[in-house]
Amino acid sequence: MQVAMWSGPRNLSTAMMYSFGARRDFSVMDEPFYAAYLAQSRADHPMRDEVLASQPQDPEKAASLCAGAFPTPHLYMKHMPHHMLDGFPLAWARDCVNVHLLRHPARVIASYVAKREAPTLDDIGYVQQLAVFKSLGGIVVDSSDIRANPEKALRRLCAAIDLEFDPAMLHWPAGPRVEDGIWAAHWYNSVHKSTGFAGPEGPLPKLDGSAARLCEVALPYYEEMKAQVL
Image (cartoon, rainbow, N blue to C red):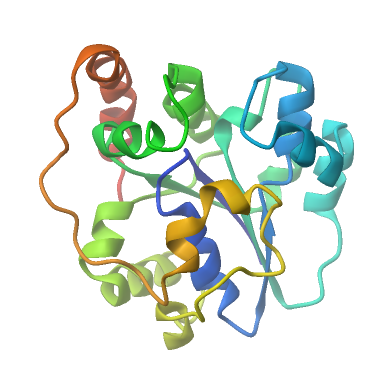
């Protein structure tokens, strides 16, 4: 089984990669199209040069990695939908189990601006995530459900994809993983301190100015996918 998990940034996606990576029967892959996205979009991201040097910049080569062999019965791939620029190959994903991970845009934006100022709609991925979902179909899960009750939510997800639940998914050792992308040094500080999923989230953060306007634009895309949640 190859699981392609599609998620915007700041959305429990790394914790989910660690959760599946804690299983003995899974290998994991961290954002294999990131360098190709940076090379073609010319986006100015933290650690841009290091990311470009660490991965194939050709999207066809990145797709070959996704469709290639892996050493365990199953593979979990963490993908950002906004990395899939126009013309990037997506056929490899049609044979995958596609799962789409959501988080309310107010929470995503509040978390994102702490790491990189002035995100745009393209940066947070809601438009692209809905497009990928419409293209590939799949299962939609909300990160708030996972944080509220990790075991219940993961059991439900595993049942939906015909995978036996493994209690190992609930815990992992603190610190980085060898599979982490090189960008982990900038983005993964919190999850490196964790040994499991954080508890339920509190009230939505209050945004103002451009952040509030961005949330207003992103919200309909989130709500359209939210209606499909498992």
